[in-house]
Amino acid sequence: MSQRNSLPSSIAALLFLLSWFGGLTVGEVSKNFSQCLDFFYNSTPPRGLERAEYQPICQRYKNRYHFASLYRRQHRAPLFSAYKLSPADGKRPKKGWMYEPQLAFSRASPEMKRFDEIVDQNVVESQAVLQDYRNSGFSKGHLCPSMHQWTMEDRESTFTLTNIVPQQIGSNSGPWNMLENEVLERYKNFCIGPMYVITGVIPYESETHWVNKRVSVPEYMWSAYCCPEFKPNLPKGKQLFPTYAAVGRNDPSSGQEIVPVNNKVKPSLRGYDVKQMTLETLEGILSRRLNVSVTLFDGNCQNPYIKSFI
Image 1 (cartoon, helix red, strand yellow):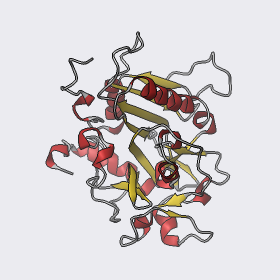
Image 2 (cartoon, rainbow, N blue to C red):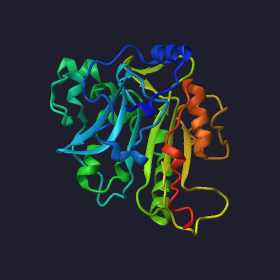
Image 3 (cartoon, one colour):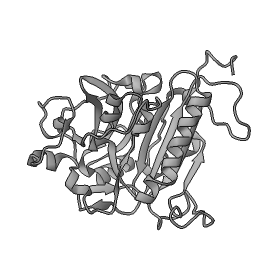
Image 4 (cartoon, one colour):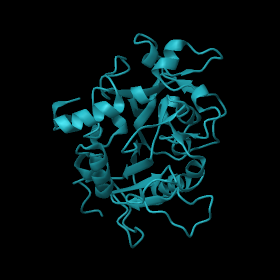
């Protein structure tokens, strides 16, 4: 990372993060996001989430980068994925799931690879594998969703387990899916030019929850977008541009201090509520829960050259 992206740190924050994420990474997928900065507004990754124990991955498929993920190696799940939204021009891919060879072998190909019938033990130790999710009670939750990617190749690239977290089915096919569709509609109706999206997770505060004692389960999902150029005829009532954000429950039994439960919705959706909020509110939640100062979009996604237009 460049010097301007470095974090103010404290011993308390460092101890918290080290205790939660484990030891240092040794893989050489990437030391930073220098090869895929296009997926971040102003080519600037989030501030406050860089740590030596997090593994930046420029997600490469068929010799092209498609999005970026910050991977929590010790918990075999991503902390976030960042991408530029583009509506899907076609159906959901039918090809199988993939993994990141360089997490297992530092000199391996940088291309994500499809799982074979027999998985190398180095792959099993370095990241999540399909067996982790079988009979787990959790679905494979995309952070960079297939529906937000344009070409078939783009959509196929999202089916890597380094872009996946254990997500409750009620969330994945319910309120969180509704949020993804709503953000897509806002992009198509109001955004001019690119929309930058970062989607991630919030860990449990007290202790880590696991799938098969291997993959960490998030307590909440979060997402934020940045659309620096947008149409002037915006819907009234909410300041939805240039930024907006949301947090969704991934555990019906979680507390309600971040996202309250709406008891008026049908039982199948209850407890998986999604609360939309300003970017500043989300950054405040992340800063408190992770005990570091978090900034997701450079300059709060404010484009000084278009103020007169909006």
